[in-house]
Length: 165
Image: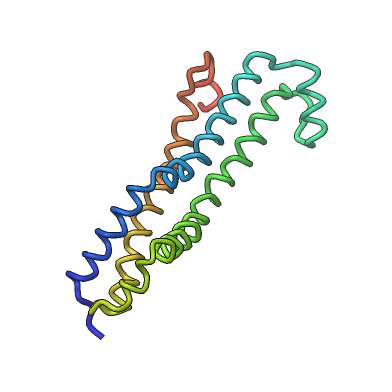
């Protein structure tokens, strides 16, 4: 079963153009890394502003991250960073599921799925083209998650660089 490279590229181009036209999709892809990055910045800001606050100590005890001799805010920041890192690693795993369902649902909604399937393009070529388009977008989404974690040490908060040394 030979793959027609030209037809796969045509399907890939079509899929990328449809994805690029859907601005809400890209906004939703960037929402999770953006929200998590802002959460990290706020957590760091609160720690730097109130490092030994009693409320921070109570919160740290509640979440069972309090360590005697360590500033409660720092315990919260470290625990928060560990949890946020997990979200950044799991987030990209959901991108292929969301995008592939959107690709098929978009074709069905626009009534182009039937038209696409009756063309002389093999179904495997259609699948490869859709797969490559989703791969590109998922890699871009994963890189945005990595970028979100990479810019956290450079938050516009005084003293934040000390935490990441």
